[in-house]
Each structure stands twice: as structure tokens, then as C-alpha cells.
Length: 133
Image (cartoon, rainbow, N blue to C red; front, side, top):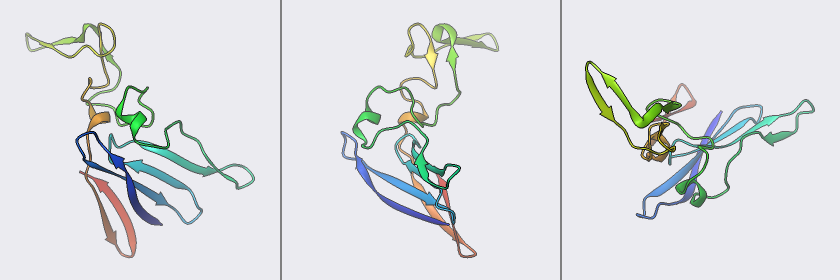
């Protein structure tokens, strides 16, 4: 197993975004960027062993920075829509951002899909492990 990283671009504010590639012994590879924790590629073998990318995504950072249908992104803090962009908890009504018509979708305009994650590679007993914080 290996983990490599390379630059994937910069946000408009100049924040560097990295792409991490996690590869196993059979060649299966997952590519994840630190913007939105987005899975940009997943290369898996077909029945004849030929690797192919099986996820929808973009080759550069720019399309991810705009509006897109959450391709490969972490969504949250919850998934799906909150009707009317509001909810009640213990007698208090909380208003949320409208980002899907009258509804609140996947954590709103600044959900996890827009967060910039810090990735750390840890080595344990000769294996590379990755975790995002």
C-alpha cells in the first residue's frame, strides 16, 4: 500500500489544495483532494483486470470550486434536504440557509463539501495510513 500527494491547485484566496493517491498492492487507487474531502477518482479492475475510473469528477480544481452536483464530496453535517430550511428542537425553531430552492441541502452552501481538510500521513508497522483532520 502506498500514499502519495501532489498539488491539485489553489483556491481564489490562495490556499493550496493537495491530491492524495492511495494505492493497494493490486493497483486499485483512490484519489482524494483536501478541498471537500472529494474523491476525484477511483480506479478499480474490471473482470479482465484492466483498471478504470468509476467515479464522476473533474480533472482540475476549478469546477469543484463552483456549483456542481456534489461529485465525490463529503456532505454534511447531514445528508439530504431539510424542508423549508428550518427545524425545531426543544421548542426553538432554527432557520438554515436556502441552497436548494426553499430547502437546505447537504449542510448548506458552506457544508463539508466546501471545507479545506488537513491530511496527515501516518506510518505504522511499515504501512501508510491517512487521516483527515
